[in-house]
Image 1 (spheres, protein in one colour):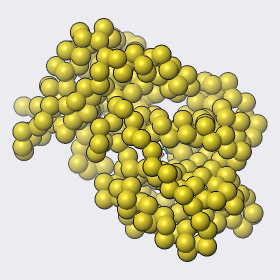
Image 2 (cartoon, protein in one colour):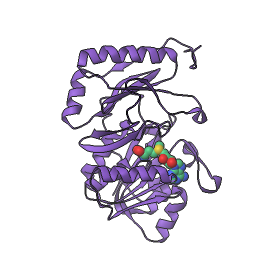
Image 3 (tube, helix red, strand yellow):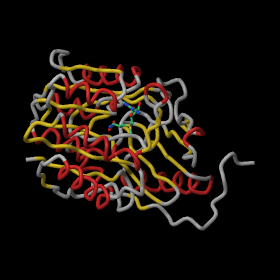
Image 4 (tube, helix red, strand yellow):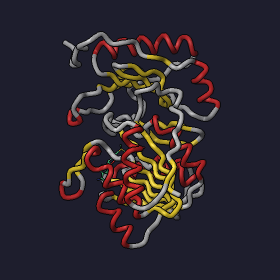
Length: 314
Ligand SMILES: C[S@@+](CC[C@H](N)C(=O)[O-])C[C@H]1O[C@@H](n2cnc3c(N)ncnc32)[C@H](O)[C@@H]1O
């Protein structure tokens, strides 16, 4: 019997990117991107490998068959295929499993995004290490050429790497020391020297007021928190309830001119809701800002990927 739930309603087939898009990514130095997105799951190219994330057995079967057909059409075939079940509850999350390919190969790999190198680890847990839907936001970080960047909820520090490559000093904050160590490895993979870069294992919510009282200021701040978490001393974080407080605290450490990225996977907080919340905070702190809208990445159809908003404080 299948360990995965049966779909309750018929699942629409996933939409696959065109083989031309794959070539365009490759020419731009990007080997990590979505291949397909659908209601039952999605497929990603991750360097020489592919990963299928699925909600049920039928979606898994369809995505495997879709990948075979897409490989034949595009001429790109993954060395290995990993699969990952997408449970409804966070505490049921497990690491990806190898579906096909050489089981003796290491479970780590290196992918590139616009020429930047990032390490992935298929055995590190539910997430391999790089959120592909943030590609355009990482590109924006580089284009803005910030000087002092605060990357909160930094995970494997991909935003910090992008900022450092643009010449910024960075501070990466995450509760998980292990994730920050992977962040340091990402810095090393891109030959970025340690000087000017700090990695702090702490609770963002507790650190922001401390930074404020020490007079620390930043011209680019990343706020990409999880939907739920437990911070220091078991403090409960729930993004819908607490994002506004987080942004208000971040505004206290924002330089007079500062770019702030808001991002969330919580479906209730769409970009319109994020902008409404941001306008309230910015006004409350007697600041003004622009809210430029970004084009969605070509490999993420509407409704897929996180909701994001840039708050350009001026
Ligand atoms: C959604 S991931 C962030 C993804 C990251 N921005 C990226 O693009 O790679 C959430 C991260 O927040 C961290 N985290 C959760 N609660 C935290 C807290 N209160 N303070 C600092 N980090 C926290 C988790 O350890 C996890 O690495």
